[in-house]
Image (tube, rainbow, N blue to C red; front, side, top):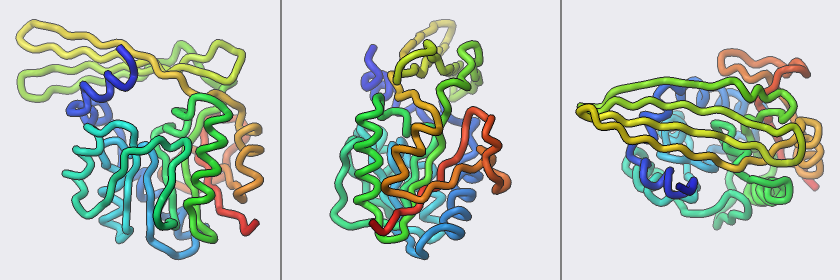
Amino acid sequence: MSSTALYTDLSGYYDLMCCDINYQAQSNMVQRLHQLFGNGGNAHLDLACGTGPHIRHFIDYGYRSSGLDIHQPMLDIAQQRCPEASFTLQNMCGFELTQQVDLITCFLYSIHYSQSIALLKQCIVSAYTALNAGGVFCFNAVDKDKICNHSIVRHNTTLGDNHFEFASAWYYSGTGEQQTLKLNITKTTANITQHWQDQHSMVALHFSALTALLAPYFDVQILAHDYDKIQPWDNSAGNALFVCVKRDN
């Protein structure tokens, strides 16, 4: 089953799959970072927005938010959750806006969905073009050499008579510019079990290479991947928050 089919077919269960994520803490941290590094504007775009949980928090903070994703069923749910927001079906690698924004976010390591360094560069250029002067592009990322292929994140939950088990893991072969996100989803209802397995091709690169891609367009701050406190990245952790302020080129 392709990644598009999996995400489309299970769009109604996406929030269950991510039920252990603290969307409020993530949104609040990025709002604080925007207040520190941004231009004071409140126009916001969330790339790969999914069903819109982050957008809901940004609207509640007073932002004029919008979202972008390649899965229409996800956007349909997001529109129900956030009727005040606008949503568009676009690929983040080459998107266009009719009006510039002040903050662009990309949560949950979704920046890696760019799949290749060439497409990631297109995403970066699109974000630069879409931002007002002094705008901020904020996302989290993982360094390819710090990936543990044996580390699996698991959780389970129940909805009505359905029991779900979710598992996800990164895999990197050790060479090249692609890594894989592996997903396993099990749904059991009345002793009948359905199982989905899928893997997504993701771009893989060092933080140094990512910084070099960003540098012509943004002043880059790399922070610790901590949504409770703001502190610099320690140069050794495998994940980090990137806060990128648009350069006046």
